Length: 198
Image 1: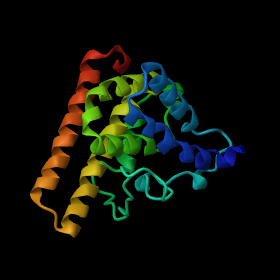
Image 2 (image 1 turned 45 degrees about the horizontal axis):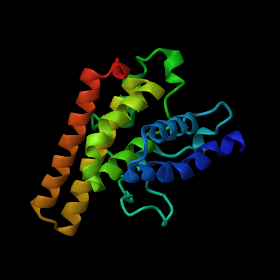
Image 3 (image 1 turned 180 degrees about the vertical axis):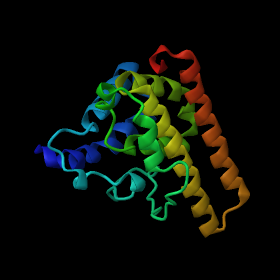
Protein backbone atom coordinates (compact mmCIF):
# COMPACT_ATOMS: atom_id res chain seq x y z
CA UNK A 1 0.00 0.00 0.00
CA UNK A 2 1.48 3.40 -0.92
CA UNK A 3 2.26 5.50 2.14
CA UNK A 4 -0.13 8.28 1.11
CA UNK A 5 -3.03 5.80 1.18
CA UNK A 6 -2.20 4.01 4.44
CA UNK A 7 -4.57 6.13 6.55
CA UNK A 8 -7.50 5.32 4.24
CA UNK A 9 -6.70 1.60 4.20
CA UNK A 10 -6.22 1.46 7.98
CA UNK A 11 -9.60 3.08 8.47
CA UNK A 12 -11.32 0.20 6.65
CA UNK A 13 -10.06 -2.30 9.24
CA UNK A 14 -10.91 -0.46 12.47
CA UNK A 15 -14.59 -1.40 12.77
CA UNK A 16 -14.22 -5.10 11.76
CA UNK A 17 -11.33 -5.60 14.20
CA UNK A 18 -13.13 -3.91 17.08
CA UNK A 19 -16.43 -5.62 16.31
CA UNK A 20 -14.95 -9.04 17.13
CA UNK A 21 -14.80 -8.00 20.81
CA UNK A 22 -18.56 -8.63 20.90
CA UNK A 23 -17.84 -12.37 20.66
CA UNK A 24 -15.63 -12.28 23.77
CA UNK A 25 -12.54 -13.74 22.04
CA UNK A 26 -9.57 -15.24 23.93
CA UNK A 27 -6.97 -12.93 25.50
CA UNK A 28 -4.40 -13.61 22.80
CA UNK A 29 -6.77 -12.59 20.00
CA UNK A 30 -7.75 -9.40 21.84
CA UNK A 31 -4.11 -8.42 22.35
CA UNK A 32 -3.10 -9.27 18.76
CA UNK A 33 -6.11 -7.36 17.40
CA UNK A 34 -5.21 -4.29 19.43
CA UNK A 35 -1.59 -4.68 18.35
CA UNK A 36 -2.68 -4.62 14.70
CA UNK A 37 -4.80 -1.52 15.34
CA UNK A 38 -1.91 0.21 17.10
CA UNK A 39 0.40 -0.50 14.16
CA UNK A 40 -1.94 0.45 11.32
CA UNK A 41 -3.15 3.67 12.94
CA UNK A 42 0.30 5.15 13.63
CA UNK A 43 1.18 7.68 10.90
CA UNK A 44 4.02 6.86 8.52
CA UNK A 45 6.61 9.23 7.07
CA UNK A 46 5.24 9.52 3.54
CA UNK A 47 1.64 9.93 4.64
CA UNK A 48 -0.19 12.97 3.35
CA UNK A 49 -1.69 14.92 6.28
CA UNK A 50 -4.56 16.15 4.10
CA UNK A 51 -5.66 12.57 3.39
CA UNK A 52 -5.82 11.65 7.05
CA UNK A 53 -9.15 11.41 8.80
CA UNK A 54 -10.47 14.62 10.30
CA UNK A 55 -10.39 13.85 14.00
CA UNK A 56 -13.48 15.90 14.69
CA UNK A 57 -15.54 13.59 12.51
CA UNK A 58 -14.59 10.20 13.89
CA UNK A 59 -16.75 7.47 12.39
CA UNK A 60 -18.78 9.92 10.31
CA UNK A 61 -17.93 8.51 6.91
CA UNK A 62 -17.96 4.78 7.50
CA UNK A 63 -19.52 2.41 5.03
CA UNK A 64 -23.22 1.69 5.31
CA UNK A 65 -22.36 -1.94 6.04
CA UNK A 66 -20.91 -1.01 9.44
CA UNK A 67 -22.37 -2.85 12.45
CA UNK A 68 -25.49 -1.47 14.11
CA UNK A 69 -23.53 0.02 17.03
CA UNK A 70 -21.69 2.47 14.78
CA UNK A 71 -23.12 5.96 15.13
CA UNK A 72 -22.88 8.36 12.21
CA UNK A 73 -21.84 11.73 13.52
CA UNK A 74 -22.71 15.10 12.04
CA UNK A 75 -21.01 17.04 14.80
CA UNK A 76 -19.28 19.71 12.74
CA UNK A 77 -20.05 22.70 14.93
CA UNK A 78 -17.32 22.20 17.50
CA UNK A 79 -16.53 25.28 19.56
CA UNK A 80 -12.82 26.07 19.31
CA UNK A 81 -12.94 27.53 22.83
CA UNK A 82 -14.37 24.33 24.30
CA UNK A 83 -11.76 22.87 26.72
CA UNK A 84 -11.83 19.36 25.22
CA UNK A 85 -10.87 20.37 21.67
CA UNK A 86 -8.09 18.99 19.49
CA UNK A 87 -5.76 21.94 20.13
CA UNK A 88 -5.92 21.36 23.91
CA UNK A 89 -5.26 17.64 23.43
CA UNK A 90 -2.28 18.31 21.16
CA UNK A 91 -0.88 20.80 23.68
CA UNK A 92 -1.25 18.29 26.55
CA UNK A 93 0.41 15.50 24.59
CA UNK A 94 3.36 17.72 23.65
CA UNK A 95 4.58 16.95 27.17
CA UNK A 96 5.34 13.41 26.06
CA UNK A 97 8.89 12.48 25.19
CA UNK A 98 9.34 12.89 21.44
CA UNK A 99 10.28 9.22 20.92
CA UNK A 100 7.07 8.12 22.66
CA UNK A 101 4.96 10.47 20.54
CA UNK A 102 5.88 8.37 17.50
CA UNK A 103 3.58 5.61 18.81
CA UNK A 104 0.45 7.77 18.92
CA UNK A 105 -2.36 7.10 16.46
CA UNK A 106 -2.99 9.63 13.70
CA UNK A 107 -6.49 10.22 15.12
CA UNK A 108 -8.84 8.94 17.82
CA UNK A 109 -11.11 6.83 15.63
CA UNK A 110 -10.24 3.57 17.42
CA UNK A 111 -11.16 5.14 20.77
CA UNK A 112 -14.43 6.51 19.41
CA UNK A 113 -15.30 3.11 17.91
CA UNK A 114 -14.56 1.30 21.19
CA UNK A 115 -16.78 3.71 23.11
CA UNK A 116 -19.64 3.16 20.69
CA UNK A 117 -19.18 -0.61 20.79
CA UNK A 118 -19.34 -0.72 24.60
CA UNK A 119 -22.25 1.73 24.76
CA UNK A 120 -24.30 -0.75 22.72
CA UNK A 121 -22.94 -3.83 24.52
CA UNK A 122 -23.00 -2.91 28.20
CA UNK A 123 -22.64 -6.56 29.22
CA UNK A 124 -19.02 -6.39 27.97
CA UNK A 125 -18.01 -3.43 30.13
CA UNK A 126 -16.40 -5.70 32.74
CA UNK A 127 -13.73 -6.66 30.19
CA UNK A 128 -12.90 -3.07 29.29
CA UNK A 129 -10.13 -2.63 31.86
CA UNK A 130 -8.24 -5.50 30.23
CA UNK A 131 -8.58 -3.87 26.80
CA UNK A 132 -7.37 -0.50 28.14
CA UNK A 133 -4.39 -2.14 29.86
CA UNK A 134 -3.42 -3.80 26.58
CA UNK A 135 -3.76 -0.49 24.76
CA UNK A 136 -1.42 1.12 27.33
CA UNK A 137 1.20 -1.48 26.48
CA UNK A 138 1.00 -0.60 22.79
CA UNK A 139 0.73 3.20 22.90
CA UNK A 140 1.68 5.85 25.48
CA UNK A 141 -0.78 5.58 28.41
CA UNK A 142 -1.12 9.37 28.46
CA UNK A 143 -2.35 9.27 24.87
CA UNK A 144 -4.75 6.41 25.63
CA UNK A 145 -6.34 8.13 28.65
CA UNK A 146 -6.56 11.57 27.05
CA UNK A 147 -8.06 10.07 23.89
CA UNK A 148 -10.71 8.14 25.81
CA UNK A 149 -11.54 11.22 27.90
CA UNK A 150 -12.02 13.41 24.82
CA UNK A 151 -14.04 10.79 22.95
CA UNK A 152 -16.27 10.11 25.98
CA UNK A 153 -16.98 13.82 26.12
CA UNK A 154 -17.70 13.84 22.37
CA UNK A 155 -19.99 10.82 22.85
CA UNK A 156 -22.07 12.59 25.51
CA UNK A 157 -22.28 15.80 23.47
CA UNK A 158 -23.31 13.87 20.36
CA UNK A 159 -25.88 11.73 22.18
CA UNK A 160 -27.30 14.79 23.91
CA UNK A 161 -27.89 16.47 20.54
CA UNK A 162 -29.50 13.31 19.15
CA UNK A 163 -31.85 13.02 22.16
CA UNK A 164 -32.76 16.72 21.92
CA UNK A 165 -33.45 16.43 18.19
CA UNK A 166 -35.56 13.29 18.55
CA UNK A 167 -37.35 14.47 21.70
CA UNK A 168 -36.23 11.42 23.71
CA UNK A 169 -36.94 11.17 27.41
CA UNK A 170 -34.43 11.99 30.14
CA UNK A 171 -34.25 8.23 30.76
CA UNK A 172 -32.27 7.74 27.53
CA UNK A 173 -29.77 10.41 28.53
CA UNK A 174 -29.39 9.00 32.03
CA UNK A 175 -28.56 5.63 30.45
CA UNK A 176 -25.76 7.32 28.49
CA UNK A 177 -24.43 8.96 31.66
CA UNK A 178 -24.56 5.60 33.43
CA UNK A 179 -22.54 4.05 30.62
CA UNK A 180 -19.92 6.84 30.72
CA UNK A 181 -19.67 6.46 34.49
CA UNK A 182 -19.07 2.70 34.15
CA UNK A 183 -16.50 3.34 31.40
CA UNK A 184 -14.60 5.84 33.58
CA UNK A 185 -14.62 3.34 36.48
CA UNK A 186 -12.89 0.83 34.21
CA UNK A 187 -10.35 3.48 33.16
CA UNK A 188 -9.66 4.27 36.82
CA UNK A 189 -9.12 0.59 37.59
CA UNK A 190 -6.35 0.53 35.00
CA UNK A 191 -4.92 3.89 36.04
CA UNK A 192 -4.70 2.94 39.72
CA UNK A 193 -3.89 -0.78 39.54
CA UNK A 194 -2.16 -1.59 36.27
CA UNK A 195 1.58 -1.38 35.74
CA UNK A 196 0.93 -0.68 32.03
CA UNK A 197 -0.55 2.72 32.96
CA UNK A 198 2.58 3.89 34.75
